[in-house]
Image 1 (cartoon, one colour):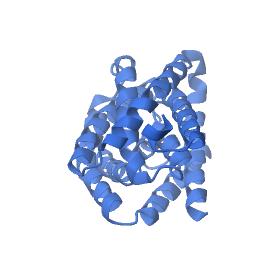
Image 2: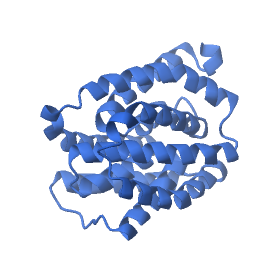
Image 3: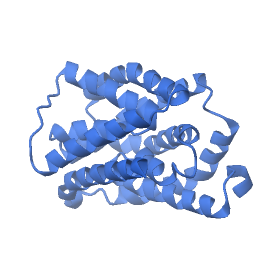
Length: 249
């Protein structure tokens, strides 16, 4: 298996644990799969190789969760966000494949951390669900998705700022990631990022990831919904700070 993955034994074991844990979080929160995988494995697998694997894993997890989340999702918001992502994703992918994306990624992470900390401090952000702010957020999330596969963090931050009920937010994130992942996958094919190695890594990682998703989904119960918002905000802060620290080192 290590030869198929083109990783050492330790790196392969780390990757399997990382995708499982990321799956657990994805099953409960509805997002953060790619962000956790990128945070854990970007020093082992180059981001340009890891991003298409994350996209395929996101699609697999969204397909599993879609049935339970579709009915609760805010469909108009999801479609508006993805309309904006049509502009943002190819721009981010272009920078990923042609330029050093580190400065843009650090800027995005710093913004996510700062805004999440404000929400944890109960500062109400001036965010509205009207079409224009939603569309602009979609452009930003698409750009960050193409750049570092962490666009879900931007959308999660936006939905948290809107004070959406946990069930609606989670369902919306599942639908948004499913639509966005499908479109991003097509763009990655055009950019030549869906390679035999990426497909092989996906085939090996998908089983432990889906096992994690099923476990995480089992914890999304009404009695635990009061923990949903602080959990998601703390997760965003932790992921963002970890990414900034890794970039600084």
